[in-house]
Length: 136
Ligand SMILES: [Zn+2]
Image (cartoon, rainbow, N blue to C red; front, side, top):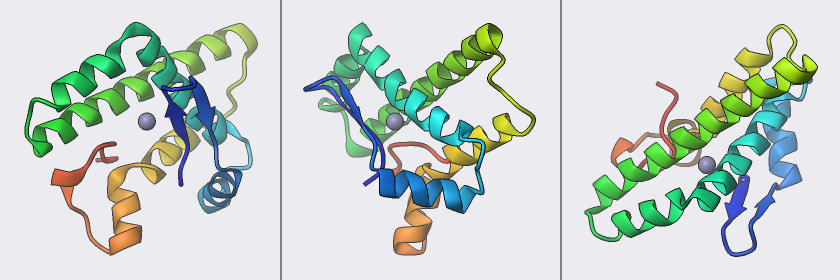
């Protein structure tokens, strides 16, 4: 299982085997990909604190599955945006980014996108079932 944020206990869970495999697969020795993934999950915590996740869940219960999936994609993109804000602020404060780090973050986002995970698990892509968006 990939990384996740749990609203019940407000914790981020990272499967270290998954993370290790992902970083090796990305050829990402600089650890920015890992930081990006953690920041995305913390972004879900921010969404929870702001009530965004609960509002989205309420809306998703009242619409068809395809629309619910599209809403979830928007939630995921906002978490990506929050991760980007974190990276910008952290870099401004402590110059954490090195050459290639932003590309590494994009590769991490693509690697955990639904299109990549579906292609790997079932050999083809079903965009109507996406809940995390695609890299395209
Ligand atoms: Zn997410």
